[in-house]
Length: 461
Image (cartoon, rainbow, N blue to C red; front, side, top):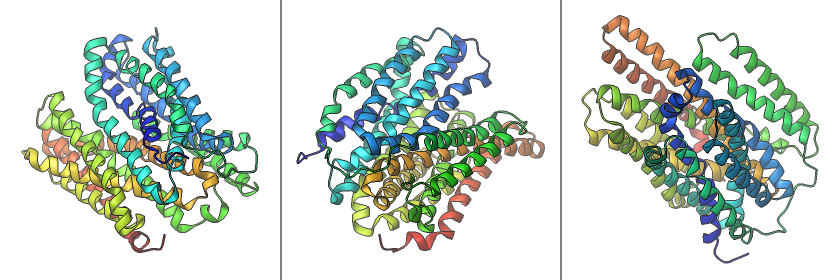
């Protein structure tokens, strides 16, 4: 194994940057809607089919990487990504664009399922946290640049530019895969049992149904469709769990899967992503509707949130080395609660400096938690299951974001409706809804970290 994994981590960061760069697509939503003469509701499927695809496949692909090699799975993801971005760029119809987005979701599942495993397998155990911190920081940098790069591509090439600009990145990342492969020990431990294709298909189907249900609820007032879908998803997940208990080598070792500590850690991953997603989802409406800022100013303010996440990811190494991953995750929870509570307290004439402080604190907490949480999960599972461990951290993130996108928008609409009847003014109604929503988000985070505080304090690693 080479002495320095820097080149390999840089190559890995370039490939995985394709995923946070997808935030650029949000900038192009209005242009895509106009290009294909869509109604506003239809555009949601550009995001939904993409998220459902990678969210449902990641755990299965992580297990596949553990058996046939993470580099092989990661390389396949980059190759498919180049094809998917090309199809998105030149899609002549909306149906073909959605098909290409499904292919893009498969490519993301292939790359992200094995990326955390690759990052940690390039270094020895003592440097695992550093590798995860570096990996998270590179993703944060891509997230900061995505809206700006998306605006430039949209202005120069139209909506197709937000996909086309990633084709050369995918090709270059594919050519750099040998830099990663040289850093991986080919003799690492591997699971002895063959890949469970049936179980992976059951898991993928269950995840797809579970993630689809809240997406439907958020877009329609009729929950009669969403509820049976969610029920079917949970029933299929229960069948998958029964199958896993009978397997000699399940996705998660039985003792670990039943560990209350491990369950709380992963529930924390969902809760943090769920509550934190309110910031990038809802605060743009505040900046546009209440403060009447232009889109460029809004993007610059929200970029500070990603900058805070970058700082948290970067400083996570020192923090975890000083107090341990569990205490670092608990400290991150405090920062998240403070950031959300600070946003909830924004008055109508809030000063930019206060907004900047709240977003930086909140982003810092999210960045720190992501690294500490990943370190805990990957450190708990055996090296032979490193792909499953890394993909699990991605799945909890996806579940939290999907739930946040569904529930927070629904709550905002409900709070606004209440506000109109009380205040009879749209702006006042939005302020009421905005404040109540972030009070709810901060309360959820506070209750969770409060009830589980003992598990985040001084428990031996």
